[in-house]
Image (cartoon, rainbow, N blue to C red):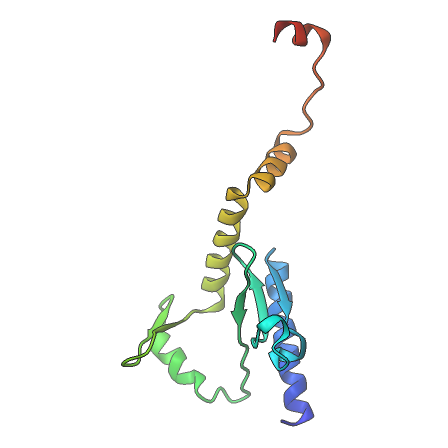
Length: 140
């Protein structure tokens, strides 16, 4: 792979990380695009959209869209495209806006189920709790 191709791949990976970060989702580029299997991970990007385990993502970029146009045509105006080959697990192609909506909802659900986060969010929303005064302590 030439330097120009490698640099283009790095730019695309960083753009995916930046996009998720701007949407409030944690994302990290895997060092060396996963070539060293850092932490046992051969992916390009780790997306933390649910729990502590990342969703491992591969990033592909093509100048002329070779191979992508057919997928775009099949997807049409739909929200998802399921690709299912005989005797193989199916996979899903999603437009970016659909993925970000799903990932954002998943991250919010995880945040709501985490009791510490939920308590911190409640404290922020309700403001500081006033200290109990002597009268309130006697009544309680």
